[in-house]
Image 1 (spheres, one colour):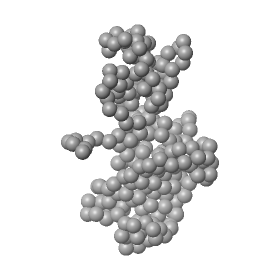
Image 2 (cartoon, helix red, strand yellow):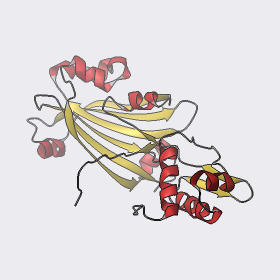
Image 3 (cartoon, one colour):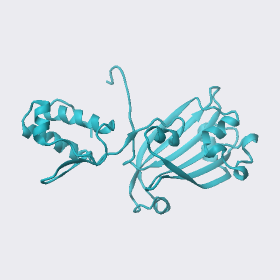
Length: 239
């Protein structure tokens, strides 16, 4: 939800939201009570209640009558340029990955869209699971079927890392673009992720190139929005 932060309770909600999203107030933690928050921000309890209502509406907290407000949000701002494993590990989240598919394919749509010389690619589909917890993503990577990578389906990834595998083949990720949208899980995806069909997930598509503009990878990821968030930064006027 996008709103102008003009009213007093909205400013308070914005401050608390930043603390929650940054991890300063963790998932499951109880927020200070209304009286304590009122003292902190030098406002009335009614203003605090309005701020908490904003956080509740945005899905960051839940308020239990007679018990207080508790943090629901456990999303983490992640830099995935080196892959989700590294990004999650930096946030203290241990995951394991199961390779679902590693095979040669021809992707004519990809070749046409990106202007590639050949539709030959190697497809790597993986399921990511929190250790001791639930599945949080499905990732499908397409990388060029270079000579140095043609035996990949037989030998597997280097250290279970696509980035390391690409680097060994001389494809060092340098730049690219990433897009994001939300969409419901189809029946097959729902089974793999053990979620109800139609559950909304974040879908990201990242296309990466080397410094000399060679295609290196396209990865489509379906991400559980309770564990991932998108952060955008900007400067200057947006109008």
